[in-house]
Length: 191
Image: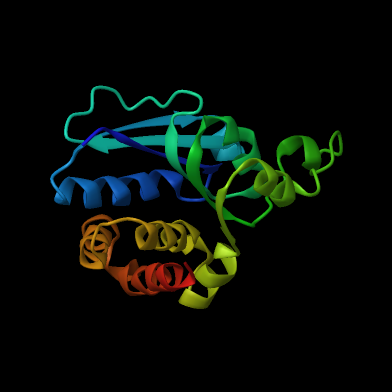
C-alpha cells in the first residue's frame, strides 16, 4: 500500500494534536507504519495549528507537500481555506463550519471573509461540511469537536468502527471517554 496522508488543520485549543494521536493509535492498531508531525503557529493565542499524519506499509517522512493530502480534517472554516492548496485534486475535505476570529479580525484590522464554503465547494469535488460544534455540544462538551470530525472521517475509511473506539480508549482519559464515544458516534452517523 502506498502511503496515505491526512492533514489536520485548526486553531490552538481545538484539539488538533489530540486528534492526531487518536488517528495515529487507530492506524497503528491496523498494523500501518505511521509518522506524525506537528506544526504550531501561535497556538496558545488561537493561531493556526497543523498536524500531518502519514500511514502505509512503509512511511519515510510525515511531511505533506502542497497537493499531497488525501484527506483534510479542518476544525475551522478559514483554516480550511488557508490550507486547501495542500489537498490533492481528488482529496476529501471534512470541514467544521465553525468560525473563530483570528487576531486581525479581533483587533478590527481585517474582516472575516464571507462565502468560504461556497468557494471551497467550487474548487473541491469531495467536501463534507457540518456543524461539528453543535454535535459536540449535544454529546456533552464543545471540546469534542475533534472527535466528532474523527467520527465523520472514520465513516469514510475502510477501518472498522471498533478500532476507532479502542483508539479513543487508549488516548482519552477515562472521565471524558463516554462523552467522546458519543461525539464519535454522532460524527459517524452524520456522514
